[in-house]
Image (tube, rainbow, N blue to C red; front, side, top):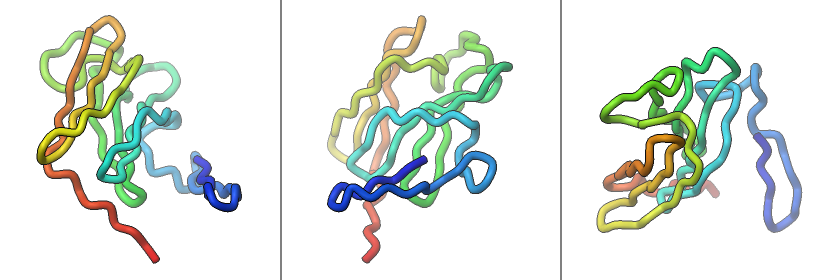
Length: 121
């Protein structure tokens, strides 16, 4: 994962898989950035597809919302590991993540009381 300073256009490698990678699987695909400073990503690995889902990273911590293994149907939780689109909707006391999930329609994840963004410096 690379971090780019928008002021100077200088880039640096922040995480490298197998060295200091904090994510659950080797693939992390950015999907959205939310008002609480979290970067939401899909995580997955190569076959077998048994550890995939949605995760967030706030610069320090990582949280995971696993999808059902092999794309199996399941009520509750993340309905499918393939998310075609993810949109953020701010609501009083938090926000919602509206997702279109492959072959499962629309899913909504509500995040209450967002954690304030901690700025260093």
